[in-house]
Length: 160
Image 1 (tube, rainbow, N blue to C red):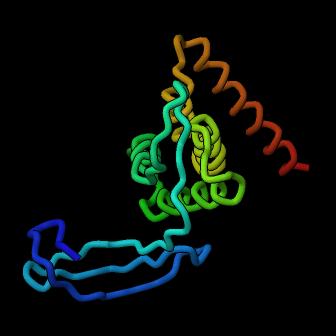
Image 2 (image 1 turned 90 degrees about the vertical axis):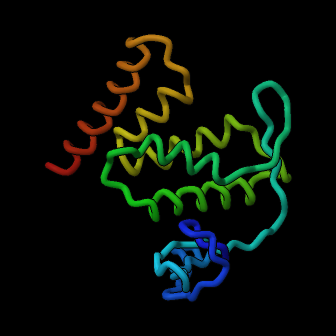
């Protein structure tokens, strides 16, 4: 493994553990040259997924793109990178279970929004505003009202 800091090609594994679904192994590594630590993930490559874009193009599924979108939505929120990566793994698993090697980009976006809505309202609204391409404040407000109404229902059930 090449060190992301200095480029040295030798390291040692400091810690290794499976994720919650046991579909990936997280490894903490330490560069033998500069001593800095970094994390790698090891996944089973089951089969290649293709994503069908809105314009009909097909491209290989790229977990990095999903993680980048989630990371942007969760910026300055109290959500760990580990939790964000877990969401990506859950989404990838859901697609693999339900698809025939292809999934629409809209289905992937909806899965991301479902996961973010449970995790953090602010991250959800951020992602939704970009994904759904809100054109004005009115669309934004409709989404916020839905969240507030759901919070009220949850709070009223808790008080009972």
